[in-house]
Length: 536
Image (cartoon, rainbow, N blue to C red; front, side, top):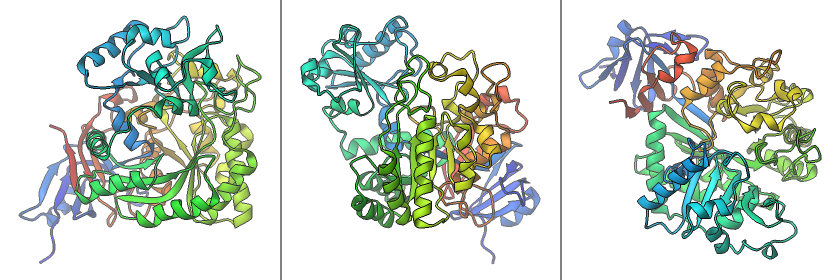
């Protein structure tokens, strides 16, 4: 007797992202794999006494969403912080912090996440402002992009930073006020001067946070993430949840590289992470660099400097020679390389390093990546296709239109707007685009990302429209995202034999007007053949 399916979804508008069979009505799942794609009538032959049948009711069924750039542990931990994403004024900030402080008297440190730049509007945020909000316990607030932190005096005292005498002459990322004294604002690596004193959560707390984060991501239809920080200890947390049957998405974990990382460390630690973690749910095999910071804090590396700071080009974390040497070593070890590069100067330096590695090691299917690419020089556009480099980008990072209040557009010349978040331009130049969120920097909701990709408007008359089509956006969250991690043979499409990672929506997403996409939600999420979320 033929084996029957464990789950069948019928009467759905199935969009497979498989060019051979782009649409269908039904999908059947047996174990962890897709065993049938076709019509609802034909699907009945897979039905047995124990088969669960779900009526798709004409809604869209897609491959499970793949987030190509996400910080799983950090985002999960920050869910317990003071949530500041919606805060727009100093009174709102005061209310949010004080309400959280009152509700959490047991905490020795108060931490907030998601703060936008420009609060208050008339002067820089300082430790004096924060002391008026919370004057007893140490308080640290992190910008939504994770590249700037503001601390009150209690936090600065804990770190021994309140007096200028405590700083070395190299602490250029510790911002001084107009009076030349410590302001309480710290950028990039300087944030570590304070965070080093914040109690580290133990493994029990990390696992509890991950369970919350995993449940949240499952409710958004995310079945795979390409993590953007990691080490063996973090991978072990995910593997432990896998062993318990509690890991509800697949995780690709990189080895985090710093300027202090040596070639020997790549050959031992990064390779060991790849060799030890190689299950269907938790994998190593990549390394992650940061070439620069972000435009909002003037730390992205630019070719032309900043409009209001023309002498500031940003400072790269690696010299041309240093990065090329490490990239060549990682490439020779068969490791995939991810590099954070926001400014056009950083993007060029990364591409130069990949070109050096290719000359030294010979060309192979390396699929190295550049993460973010917020600005790119026209000369570098064809180099992505030429070098086989993936463009990993985040739709929710881009200002949606000229009317959206966002400091980002003030950081680049208007002449560079056409090459800012240049999704369409890069795609037309032959680059493969993989989309993600950068959670906790932005919402990890792929539907919100698709909304941004479809609805983006030019920032001025005559400027390039970088908006995507529905098919392009979905492919960048599924098939092309799988390709970006060497997994296109097992996921990213609805195809017989591939892993059963699926998401059923609450509407036919192709029939919904683009401006109404945010009304669409997830009805059912399936990862590895298992239902991991079901809308009540």
